[in-house]
Each structure stands twice: as structure tokens, then as C-alpha cells.
Image 1 (cartoon, rainbow, N blue to C red):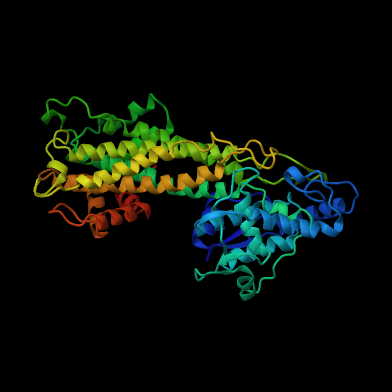
Image 2: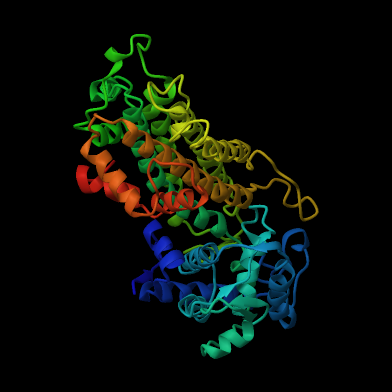
Amino acid sequence: MQTVVLGTTGTTAADVVAVARSNARVVIGEDAVAALAAAREIVDALAAKPDPVYGVSTGFGALATRHIGPELRAQLQRNIVRSHAAGMGPRVEREVVRALMFLRLKTVCSGHTGVRPEVARTMADVLNAGITPVVHEYGSLGCSGDLAPLSHCALTLMGEGEAEGPDGTVRAAGALLAEHGITPVELREKEGLALLNGTDGMLGMLIMALADLDILYKSADVTAALSLEALLGTAKVLAPELHAIRPHPGQAASAANMAAVLAGSGLTGHHQDDAPRVQDAYSVRCAPQVAGAGRDTLAHARTVAERELAAAVDNPVVLPDGRVESNGNFHGAPVAYVLDFLAVAAADLGSIAERRTDRLLDKNRSHGLPPFLADDAGVDSGLMIAQYTQAALVSELKRLAVPASADSIPSSAMQEDHVSMGWSAARKLRTAVANLRRVIAVELYAATRAVELREGLTPAPASRAVVEAVRKAGVEGPGPDRFLAPDLAAADAFVGEGRLVAAVEAVTGPLA
């Protein structure tokens, strides 16, 4: 099992994915333990003074004007967790909750939160035991951070509420902690607030979306190349010198990927056999430009994610000079924006893939392919309704592209009067990524069938490798009508698990 060590300087996207999806073990580094202890000394010293300090000896949010005496401070910290654990709706996915918990622990380990080392150790113990708090869909406005989702996680640390055990059964959190020998934490000054006040949920979902989209953008380059090949298009538009004069790096990478897939094809370049066609349609010819713009959006989103992974998001924060200062770093705008940008890019990539699929099925535009790629058109409907499904997915992608971050709704008696809605942006992006994967799977299904129907012409070696691999994966080739849903599900898994990209890279080497 992989081990991830958390120090004071943040973590990596790969570590987040490893903990969230592969149950990597979490260890707190010695530098983090020392930083936690040093920061806690500062908090304890401030707690002993008569002057009120926000988060240490005051209420929270709009109630921050009340000074809280020492005898009530432990109750205050328990109460903020209990009252803020107010989520509703369906449970969010296990991987999202694990990412959320790990990223909160990352900030705690920075030494800027004032949390005791034993609280951090308990957080790591819960992750390592495979205990996953029950977190609900609704409850975060993305400012101050992902409050309700993080509160449900903190509630589990206290031995309260519900959590899912490693066996997948939801039970009382206290019983699960006891079974794994974990002592519930008794929160002290500032600790309840420090466990709640971060953008960890939206950041975790951004990082996992970036990992998934990296596979999907490569997959989309492959399916675009297969469609170009099946339509007897020209690969000349992929020449690097054409993309060098419009120097967007993502565009050049997509064009290079498509060219690598099509190397050695006997299907491309047949315009001379089809007099009315001077150029390929935009959905074919402009594939690198559209996918490339999305790739550049991914690059920007990665930059934002890397900055957030190095950040300590809390309010107030403990500074090295001993000050504990209020701030606005919990606002989710930087993350919310890129979550929405990615949803826009996903919608457009899905849209252009659907247009290529439709072209493959239309006998008036497919340059000699049978209607709907049917075996006996009229008796067979072929892939007619597969394209309907793809179109429905694209339509929803367009709705999901409406930005959540353009909205704001005031809360906490107008103290929190501008919020990011980053959690909502992240939730809809997860749906968009899943829909994009399905759209690409439908194009793959249609394009591989179309390539096989070009009898007498030899596809590129990489194309042949894709056809062979996808058939072995249970996706059937040309023939009479059959129950399509299982084929489409198999194609979806083939794309999402990275097997499409792997089949190509076995021939071409690594794609960009």
C-alpha cells in the first residue's frame, strides 16, 4: 500500500488521488508535528489572556462579538461542529469525502491552524482505518469554505453522527472508532473552527476531475482521429507547421496526438475521390482547435490547484510571529472559477464529438457509409438511437456549463454577504465529466464500426489496435441490430479506465 507523508508545505495532486481513490496510508511528518505543537502554544497563550481573540475566545460569524469565558470554550467548539453539521440530500461519494478529509489534514499540518498534534493524528487514523463520514450533497456555499461537509467529518472525529465503515456499512461513528481503537477527540479552543473552515471539498473534486479529464482529452483526440479516418478525411490539417502559426500549446498537442493515431492510414486523404468536398467539416477539421482550447483550460486549472495544494486555508490563522489574524482566504472564488471553466470546456468537447458521430451516421454526409451504420438499413436502425443518447448527454452538458460561481446568496445575517458557490460548481463538474466520458464512448463505438465498414482500405496501425482492443472488451462490431446498452456501457468503461489511451500508446508511444 502506498504511503503519503504530510509535512508543513502542502501536498501533491497525485497524493490526493492516491488517498481518495486508492486508500493510500497517511503519515504525519516530524516537521508537521513540530509545527502543530508550536502553533498550539501560541493559541494556548492567547486563550489565557483576558482579551477576546476571534475563533479562540469569541463566537463565530455574525456572533463573533460575544466573548466566551474559559469554562464554555470546549462546549463552544463542540457546538460549532454539531450545529454546522446540517447537510441534507443524498450522500456524496466516498472518494470525495476522503479527499476532503485529507486536504483538511493537509492544512492542519501546515502549523497555521493552532490544532493540537493529537487531533491531526486522529484525522490520519480515521482515514487509515477506512472510516468515511456521511456527508450530504447540500450544505456548502463555498464560503467560509465547505462548512457543512467539513462539519460532518469533524463530527465523526468527535465520535458522533454516522460514518461508513471499511465494509461499506453505515453505522454510528462512535462504534466504528471504538472498533478501530480510535479515541474520539475532545476539542479545545479554535479546533472546531479550524476543522470546518476550508475549501477542501471543492479542491478535492477539482483534483479528481483534472485526473479524469487528462484521460478524456487524450481519448477525445483518439476518437476524433478515428472519425476523421472513417470519413476519409485529410490528415494534412494536422501538420505541425499549421499549428505553429497559432501557437496555443493545447492545440499543438491535440493535433500531434491525432497525427500519431493516423500515421500509416490507408483511409485518409481521399478527397480526390469525392469532388464536392473541398475541405472537411469543422467538427473534423477544427478538432485540435477545440480540444486544444480545453487542454489549455486544464493547464490553467492545474496551476490554480497546485497553488491551493500549497496553501493553508483557515480563519483565523496562526502566523510565525505569534499573531492570530482574521483573513478572507477561505473564499472559494479561485477554485470555483476554474471548476466552471472546465464545465464549459467539457460541454464544447462533447458537442463537437456528437457532431462527428452524427456525420458518421448520415448517409448524405458520411461519404459512402451505410445509413446509421446499419447492417440492413430499414430493417435495422443501426446506431440511430445511440446518437439520441449522445445528444441528450450533450444537451445536459450545456446546461451544466452555466456557471455556479456567477451566483452568490448572502448568509449568516449578512456577515457572509458574498459567497463562491464553489461546492456547487464542483458537484456539477463531476456530472459533466461523467457525461463527457459517455459522449466520447458513443463516438468511439460509432467510429470503430465505421472504420471496419471501409472494406478494401487499411486503417492506421493505431486504429487497428483500438478496434482489436475494444472488441476484446466486449464492444461488438458491425452486424444486425442487437441490445445496444451493454455495448455502450462496455465502451464507457473502456474509455474511463484509460484502456483506449493505453491501446493507442502501445503503438504510438505516450500521447501528449
